[in-house]
Amino acid sequence: MSDSLVPVTVLTGFLGAGKTTLLNRILTEQHGNRYAVVINEFGELGVDNDLVVDADEEVFEMNNGCICCTVRGDLIRIINGLMKRARKFDGIIVETTGLANPAPVAQTFFVDEGVRARARLDAIVTVADAANLPARLADSAEASAQIAFADIIILNKLDLVTPEAADAVEARIRAVNPLARIVRATRADVPVETLLHQNAFDLARILEMAPAFLEHDEHGHTEGVYSASFEVKRPIDMHKFQEWMGTLLQEKGGDLLRTKGILHVAGEARRFAFQAVHMMADGDFLETPVGPEEKSRLVFIGRDLNRPQLRRGFEACQVAA
Image 1 (cartoon, rainbow, N blue to C red):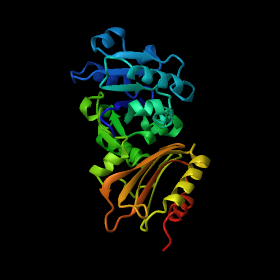
Image 2: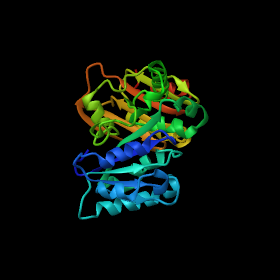
Image 3: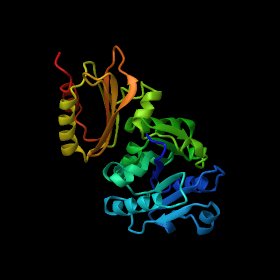
Image 4: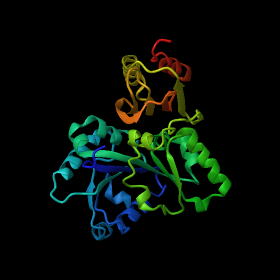
C-alpha cells in the first residue's frame, strides 16, 4: 500500500460504548499529527467547538443522519475535497453514529476510484461496552455488525464488570469475529498510537507479518452472526475461484459481512490475499513466496452461513487431484 495514500480510520460502536471519550482523547493528545474528523451529527457527538479548535483538527458534519448508503456520496465528496487542500492531513477519522452499520463506509474505499487513488482504509475501530455488549448482541443487528466488521475492538468500561465477566464478553466477541485485535480499556484509555496508522485493514501487510493470521478453527456464533473458517490443500484454480466468489457475493453478499483469505493459486509463486466487504471484493499478490506445504484459507463472518455449502464451494475451486 502506497505511503502517499492518506490513512482513514472508521470509528464505530453502539450508543454509550465510549466513542465520544475515545474521540476526545484522539483530538487532545499530543501525538504530533493533524487529522480531519468526519462525523454525522456534531451535536449528538458531544464534542464542543472549543475542543475541536484547540485540537487544531477540522470537523466536517454530515447532517443527513446516519452514515450509510444514502450519504456515501457526501463522504466521497468530503474526502475528495480534503485531498485537494494545500494543507495536508496525516489522517482522516470517520465517526459513525451508534446505530450505524460500518459496511457502507468501508465499501466507499472499494467502489469510488477517486477516493481509492487518494486514501486507504487503515482500520475499522469498534468501541464495545463490556457491561452491555451481550445484551446488545442479542437485540441489535447493528451492534453485531460493528463487532463483525472490526479490525480493532476496544473492550471498554472494564471497571463495571468482574474479570470473569470480561473474559466471557471477550469470548462472545471472538465467536463473532475471530480475527480482530481486542484491546481492553476502562475509560477508552488506549494509546492513540495503537489505534491509528495500523494498516489493520490491509490483509496483505498483516499476512506478510503473520503468515498464520487466518489459521483459526473457530466457527462459533452469537445471535445469528457467525464466523466460519475453511482450509484446502491443493492449489486454487483462480478462474473457478473468481466465478464461485462472484456468484456467492452477488447472491449472499448482504449476509457476508467480511470475507478474508490467503490463497495458493495454481501456477503462481506468490500467495494471493483476498478480502471483501459485502459484495465489494479486492485482492492482490503478496511478495512472500508460496511455501512447500502451502494451504489456502478462507474466513467468512456473517449471518445465515451455510457451512457445508461454503466448504463444498471452496473445495471445488481446487485444481483437479
